Figure 1 (cartoon, protein in one colour):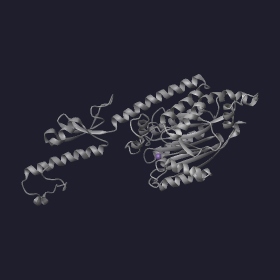
Figure 2 (cartoon, helix red, strand yellow):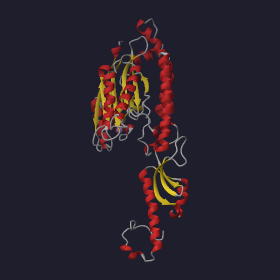
Figure 3 (cartoon, rainbow, N blue to C red):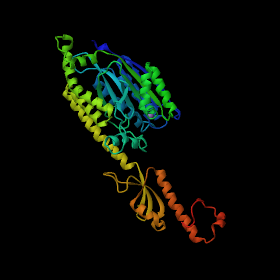
Length: 448
Ligand code: MN
């Protein structure tokens, strides 16, 4: 078999959806260089569109060598370009996800190839094999990390107020770490690359049913987009379906190696058997866990499996690259943790006493690690006017998820104060109060 043995066929569909006014998703089909990418931009009216397009353009001009290393470098380059563009314009804060599949050369002496999944953010790659759909990527989002840490359930994640907050993204921080992992393609496999506009509207079973029913990848992609719109179309939707028409004998050689028929003096396979041996060690364990994964989906099992795959491959990598990658990963994990804590420490507001005056703060009452709450705005309400029922709350700090909510809470206190003042300065029955011009809350009981 030659390097040209692996053949893939792609179909794509994209749509603005039924709610948004513009499509901030972008995609790339680059079959000549074996690269397929979906990017979901975010930030401002135009920022998202610009960010996802910049990412795609970077892949298009900078991805030349078909290697894993080159792929990682292009991701870093895309991050850099978007970050720079965001600094020098009104596009501040823009960013984009990117999920891709690349056909790259094995990093040994053979001219064999394999597939690599690359991911930053919460777009996804799925594998459809033997009638079942498996998510290949980990979402880089706050809720997905909480689920992986066992702190909330998947059901809680679905309705979590911060479910759209992503922890890794291209263009927002000076550095980014992409997830990269290799896959051995098997003839008949279908890969799905998509933005969250698809899987937030369409269930796994529905997606699998479409991939089972429609052979043509373009038709399947279009049908998935149609279903997402039918489900609500609340976001832009982009889908690439990628079919493995020919795996170049990878699967055959792998199973031959497993059954011990490799090494019967075949020169063709001699150079490859070492690589197969490496893979086989992990694949032997994988197959059992893969079955487990299908029967009782377990994040932990999938992650372990990936870790094993990475470990098996890295034995064949140059040490310098391995050390560099490990360092980058470590920095990425630390950076992600810092960013998450920073976000958690500053994402809410609370109302509390600033001395004897009520004030709105940004942050958490009492602070969080190195993050002290910041005074957002004073309210002019003094302690002696505050109704007793608010006092405990304000002493502890009353939390709100947004500034608007905090202001609403302050408005409520003010209303109570003015109603109480009105009730104590006039003894007239409420029916005569129609002449009072400042009445704002007809439903409130005057006795309060
Ligand atoms: Mn989206």
